[in-house]
Image 1 (tube, helix red, strand yellow):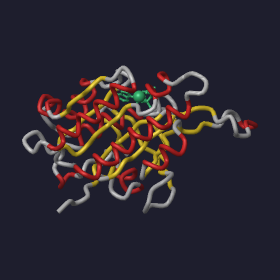
Image 2: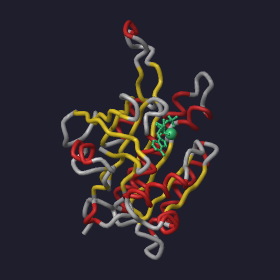
Image 3: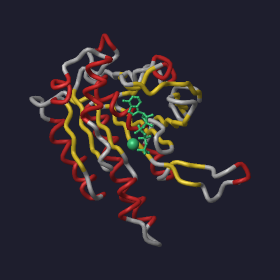
Image 4: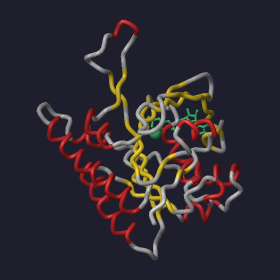
Length: 244
Ligand code: ATP
Ligand code: MG
């Protein structure tokens, strides 16, 4: 009886690349440089996850773990009101936001969210966002020789997210940072790669790279989908969120 949902990103082209949108029972990663629109995508999905199925929504509630203080209720209100003609207060009431200041707190929150997701009176939840998944792990394990412990803990965290996605039919979206790739040939400038290595690629079913285009244009590239070819499209960052 668990049917997969696709939650619209707000852009038809982007949805098409993803096979319909951000998928439930699955973990999707989005990475890219600063100001490429990763958090704007999160804000847009906070609204679209609540839309009825007939409008490409998930007809559900949203949980958000904010590790950078980047969640902006005003942005969610603006998107809800201007783009989807929804009552901003109702939309915000359906979003649970938890602010984490350490990787331990981040991990605990995800564990505790399992209790919430399992409670039929408080759901259904259809979207869980972690913005960002790796930042606090990088801060808390920044010393030499701590990399393997960091990766182990990150793996435990991600496996729990995979489990939540499957058990509760939730779309999990994790935002990731990029870092310079020391192994790459830098003749054409620094080559950036997502943080977290194989631990992330193993747990995430779909990966998205966001790049700057001209002005408010952004390029979204789907790089690791189980059922869609590698392809990219151009989207826009607008007052109403992500759009064609
Ligand atoms: P970081 O890695 O620093 O967290 P990010 O990828 O999360 O970056 P966002 O915060 O999602 O970046 O994107 C910031 C960009 O979103 C701004 O540069 C701006 O172009 C755009 N933006 C923000 N608010 C609006 C708005 N109300 N209307 C249109 N565009 C906006
Ligand atoms: Mg951000």
